[in-house]
Length: 382
Image (cartoon, rainbow, N blue to C red):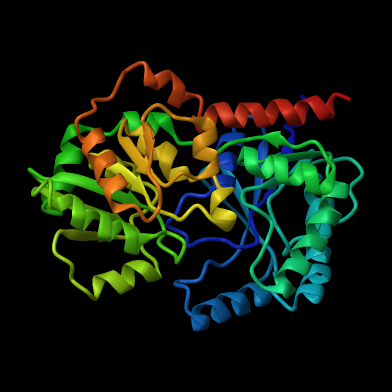
């Protein structure tokens, strides 16, 4: 009997907190239908404070190599050095070389922008994935990331990127063909949410009888939560029963929680196994990130998740959202309160059109994963 083929998945260098869904993890889970999947992991800081990050980094450096099963994945922990960059690259590549020699993967799916350079590969098909624009604010980071990305692109057999904008950026800058592989949602999980679960969440947070504007995700400085609150305050002047339901954590949430703003309700961070129920418990979803810098190149997963929950969405005009033109998404300019209020008033009276389901289903993680498998298999048959 022929041995099952295997794939090694390497997450991005900048890993978000453990309670949030990640592109690499979602794809890895679905790749188990086709391959034996090894998923490289490391300690996730408890929060974003310097102490937590130092503690996590120290634990990673001192840990012994281990492998254990979770969600059908072989979770691999290796000793990992996070800096200084040049030393970390050499150190982490050495451990990766040992792992690759031991498991002999047929495929490697790497999303690391600086932390895990790959050794030279002879037999494995190498896919280098871009979940975000490979840039940084500081000059030092920019040099490190650009050098790393150039080197990995030369090694890779296949390049994939999450948005059309990143595809075009990479093709122009590095002169390689890049395949579009968007973000998605687990459609079956959203379809399985019951009315009792929705009503339970609405009772728990005092949302019964309210028009619930939901903003769900991680709230870093790029989230535009300040603007979301301003939009809500102006909209409430038109719709008295409106509330802003903020689901997730981050420095922007901490700031607004201290202000105790009327009608702004915070759920805090919600685990990956529960958060889809919160998407189904709102009336409309919003995204208020300013369309500048790396955000304008992004493909926000939350927009597809709002849509999987069959919700109307109002968002700032990020380039990718303008490009894919989802039927349930209205775009309103960042900073224009009047335009946002008009958009919210419009979606408030717009029911979900069942014909939209076919459009949204294209972004099911299962379909996206099958496209990735086709790309990998196409190269392995050469």
